[in-house]
Image 1 (tube, one colour):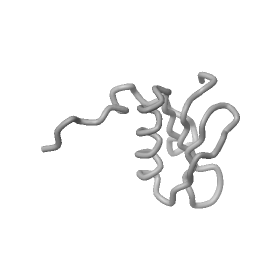
Image 2 (cartoon, rainbow, N blue to C red):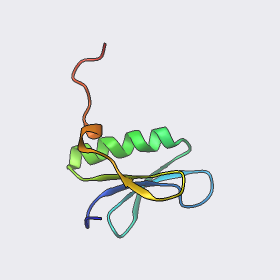
Image 3 (tube, helix red, strand yellow):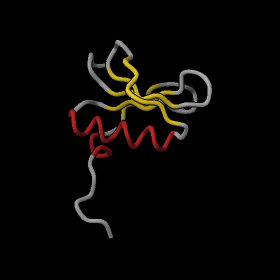
Image 4 (cartoon, rainbow, N blue to C red):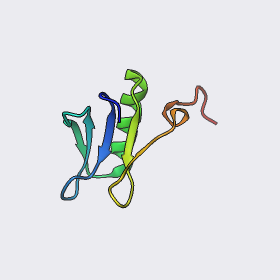
Length: 75
């Protein structure tokens, strides 16, 4: 992984954490994974950083750049 990135992970317990960089600076914690991923996507998009999200087995998977964009118009 690059030296600066956003990681959505569930280290212990019931909360999902959004971390930044190799120092694992915790930015915010959420009860729901969807909320943590949404915050991580917005942060990664605004800072132009790669986003990694832990899968079911706890392995960080890099998200595609296309998943970080938001639609201009909603139907």
